[in-house]
Image (cartoon, rainbow, N blue to C red; front, side, top):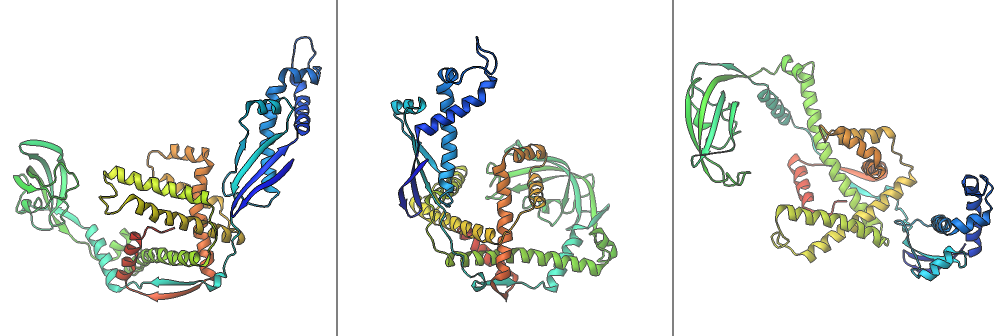
Length: 454
C-alpha cells in the first residue's frame, strides 16, 4: 500500500491510496483458496476444483468483494498510521471510469482511491485551577417553609357535607352542560365535577355563579370565555351553563401536627419542616447548578481558542436549524413575525453551533484525560428515566434503544458531560455569592433568552 498526502490545509486532509494489482491478485488468490473447499461444480469432487478454474468462473465477483474489503482495511490503516483522529468518517472516492474499474476487477490495474477528511484539532487544556467561577447561593427562609407547609395544608383539606348554601371555600359536586348560541360544544359537559369556590379553577365568573347554591338545586350560570382562552374556537364567546348541584361540602383544615407530617412521609412536624426546607433548597440548588455550569462553560470557551472541524459545525448547525424552522412551521409563523430575518437567525445559530462544537471537544478532551467513566448502572438509570416519559409504550421504547447503539450514546453524553463538569468544578476557583431567590430565578429567565447555551 502506498499512501501520499495530497492536501494538508488546516484540519483538512486528503490522501491518495494505491494498492498494487499484485497485492489485489494475492488477496484474490487467498480468498479463492478459502472457498474452494465449499464449492461444488459438475465434474469435480468437493474441494478439488482448481483455483484457476474458480478464478475463471467467480473471479470478477469475488474480486469485487476483495476490492471492497481492501478499501475498508487500507483506509482505516492509512488514517491510523498518521495518528490523527478524523472528525467524522472519511469520505472515500474512486474513479468512475468504467474501463479503469474493469481493469482493477480483472486484476490488470492498481486500485487507487482518495481519502478526504477533517481531523480533530489538538487541544491544549488550560490550567483548570485558574478558571474563575461564581456560584450563586440562596438561603431558605423561614417564611418560605411556612408557605410551603400552608400549601400542604391546603392540599390536605377535606370536605364535610353541609345542608346550607355554598360559600367561598366550599366544595360543590355538580353536573353541568354548556351551550354557545344554543349549541353544545366539546368539553362543555361533565358529571360529578368537584368545584371548590374561590380557587379559580374554572372560567372566570363560573364559581361565583354557584355561591349560595344548595344540594339538589339547579342553576343557570352565564360566563364569557377569556379572549386569550387556549381553545381558540371558544375564546371571547358568551356561554350559558345549565348546572345541577349534587352536594355541598364545607372545608375541614388539618392541623399542622404529627398526623399531617405522617401523611407526607415524616414522623414529626420538625422532620416535616426539615424535609420541606431540603426540598426548597434542592430546587434552588438545581437552578444554581445551571448557573454555575453556564459560568463554567463560558470560562472554558473563553480559555480555548482553536480551529473547528467545519464538518462538525455544519452538522450541529443543521440540527439546530431544523429545530428552529420546524418550530416556526408548527406555530404557523415566519421570521418576520418574530421581528427578525432568516439571515440574522442563521448567523445567530451558527455561533451557537460553533460554541457547542468547541465546548464538546474541550469537555471530551478533559474527560478522556481524567479518565471519566460511565457505568452501566448510570446508563440503565437514564434509560429507565426515559422509559417513564412514555407511559404505556415502555417496551417499544426499550426495544428501540436496544437496537440502536446511537440512541444509547445519546443517553451517555449528558451523563458524561455532567461528570466532567463536576470534575472541573473540584479543580476550579469557585467563589460563592449569596443572592435572593428572585435574583436567582431572574438570572435563569435572562439565560433562557440567551439561546447560546451549550
